Every structure is written in structure tokens, then in C-alpha cells.
Length: 233
Image (cartoon, rainbow, N blue to C red; front, side, top):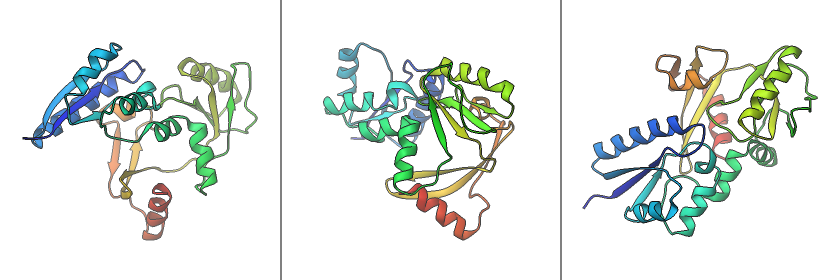
């Protein structure tokens, strides 16, 4: 008998549509590999959802943003003894909270751009331009603006607070967009992303043809090793 996989998808966050796309792709891949697969769009009738999820051997968590990534759904599944993919509650909460992630990075010696938090739309950043202004707990580049001119600061802050609070301000560092997949404790080949826009924004992430993906990234061996070691800490 093949493993029964439930794919949890959708959810109440702003990234619902992305989650549905992810969930459908995951379900298709699971079926192609011989798993008995059922899609479960998230809803707030927890008892009904719990009864369905408990019928599966494992739940593939394809939720994006909000409760799907901030540790809450993970804690709920742990409490109800449901096996699921991905990190547990504590790690998920830290990863979704950009400020906490950066604090941990600093403690373990991973370099991160200088930053500060704004707790009100009336606050102004102290960092010099250019800067990045974004919600502290959002994904998919929602509410993010790269600010090059002082006239852009207040609109960028307002846009970020529209998507979440507090708001993070980071020093902008121009460079290449690199990403590294981690499976267990293994770092896989580095991918370079070349978006059509100035940044790898929502449109470039989810619209076919808006970004180029180069794997492995064209980096020297020493730099590749350094990036993978930092990622795998």
C-alpha cells in the first residue's frame, strides 16, 4: 500500500493564491511518484479539518504566509499528533519573523544588512539611503519597496504597514540574487535568479518568463563553499 499524503493548501493569508498553485504542483508530483494523494484547502472548521488530516500518513504543508509559516499550524499539528513536512513551531516562528531571524544570524556569525524596526507609520528610518522597507512578517515580497529618494520613504512605509506590523528597514545592498535549497542538513547547488525588474518581486516570482534561473550559479569554488556553509549553519 502506498503512503497516503495530504496536501494542505490555500489558507487565509495574502499568499493564498500562491499556496494553491504550490499545493496543486505538489499533489501532481506526489501522484506521479505513486503516492495516494488528497488535497485539503484550509478552512477554520478545525474539527472537520483535523478528522480529514488524521486519515493521512503525512501532511505536506503547502500553506504560504500567516498561520501556515509562523508556527501556529505547526503547533496545532504537533498538538494533534499529525506528521507534517517542514520545520517545527519554534523554527517556523523564527523564520517568519525577519527581525528574530537576523538576530539569530548575527549570533551565529552570518552576515546580514544593518536594520531597524518601525512600530508606527509616523516613525522615520535613521538609516541612510538606499534602503529596503518591508513588513517584518510577510513573504512573496508583499509590501516591499527599495527606496532611493527621500520622497519615496513615507509612501513605502505606508505600503509596508498595509501588509503587516512592525515594519523592517534594511540597508540596501546591490548585488546578485542567490538562493540555496536545504534538505535535512545538506545544501544543494546554488541558484542565481535574474529578475526582469530591479528586485525579485511578486510578479517576477510567479509570472512565467519574468525571471531567469541559472543552476548552478556561476561562482568560483571558494565562494560557492562559503555560501553553502553559511546557509547550512
